[in-house]
Length: 232
Image: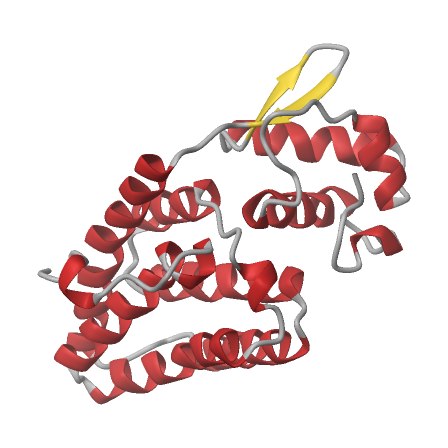
């Protein structure tokens, strides 16, 4: 097993644990770490060029997110998840995130606009360069920050958990593609629609953006609008 997208170059900085969490979460989301086999902490630490300690700490965190199962004295395995589970996750996200965007658009103001724009730019840059680790990290931060504008910390926590439990195996094939860059550019468009107070357009864009997680990002064809749950 070889970790991808610069993970094997080693970790650096003040929080090896946090970097390991981001890398391993990404590898699980895109399918590089897959269900059906047992991974050892030693082999992961060797791939990341760090000691086993930050890897073990990262894995305990991911076990708490229900992404993996720790196997005592042996390592860990990735939790199985099927299409029905993924459909439920996508539906839950729609029911939570689309109304939240409607509420923010009705207020037409984003206190964290500067940081949101910066994160939107980061996702576009990473998408253009085919850097999936940076893309998914910035994408997650963007959506978490955007939802935090509602002031509802429980909403933010629930959506973050739902995001982390999904699988996006189609992203590897989309690396550096026009489709991935177009999706990244929807972040900037969403900011503009919220600030313009355009509720119908913001609702439709957010619903379409979420459909990527069960369409091309998941390795399947895009879900037609009429088959999605866009009735919020």
